[in-house]
Length: 183
Ligand SMILES: CC(C)(COP(=O)(O)OP(=O)(O)OC[C@H]1O[C@@H](n2cnc3c(N)ncnc32)[C@H](O)[C@@H]1OP(=O)(O)O)[C@@H](O)C(=O)NCCC(=O)NCCS
Image (cartoon, rainbow, N blue to C red; front, side, top):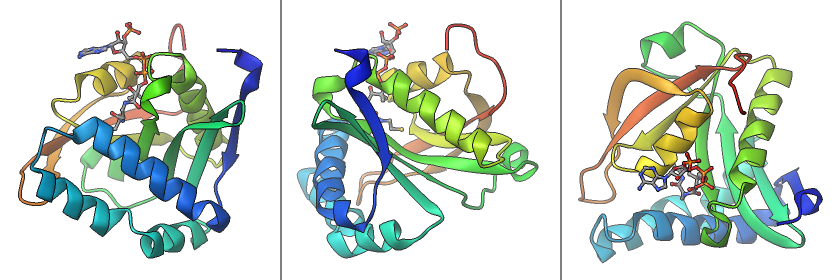
C-alpha cells in the first residue's frame, strides 16, 4: 500500500448508492454465518436501504466518511452524537463511532489506523471529550484493534439482534486526548 495514496473525505447525498453498496458488502462479510440468511437479508433491507442512508447523509450532525486507497473506496465510518445510557459516557461530551468498516481487501493493511486517527482528530476538533462504540462480543479482531487505540470496557453491553438472531454488543470508550503509545 502506498501511504500517500490514502484519502479520506466526508460523504454526501451523492454518495448514497456507493455507501449502500459498501455498507451491505462489509456488513455481510463481517456477520455472515453468525445469523440466518433470512435475518441477514432483513437486516440489510431495514438499515441499509437507499432512503434511510440518504436521510442520514442529509443530516448535518450525522458524519459519514469514506476512505480511498487510490481511486478505490476502501472503507467507511459513521460518527454521530447520540444519547447513551452508559454512565461514564453520559458524564462527558461524547461522540459515538457508530460504524467502522473496511472492505475485506484492505483489512490488515494499515488503512484502519489512518481512519481511526482521522476519527479521533475529527472528534477532538469538534470539541468532544470522549468516543464510544459498540462491538459484537465475539468480534475479537475489531476488539483487539479498538483496544490498541486505547478503548476500554465500560462494563455495559446491549442486545444487538440481527433479525431473530440474538447478539450482544459491548460498549467501549476512550477519552479523545489520551496519548496511546504506538498510535
Ligand atoms: C475492525 C477493522 C476496521 C480493524 O482493522 P484491521 O486492519 O483488521 O486492524 P489491525 O490489523 O490493525 O488490528 C487487528 C488486530 O487483531 C488481531 N487479530 C486478527 N484476528 C484476530 C482474532 N480472531 N482474534 C483476536 N485478534 C485478532 C490482528 O493480529 C491485529 O493485532 P496486531 O496488530 O497486534 O497484530 C477491520 O478488521 C474490519 O473492517 N473488520 C470488519 C468490520 C468490523 O468488524 N468492524 C467493526 C464493527 S464494530
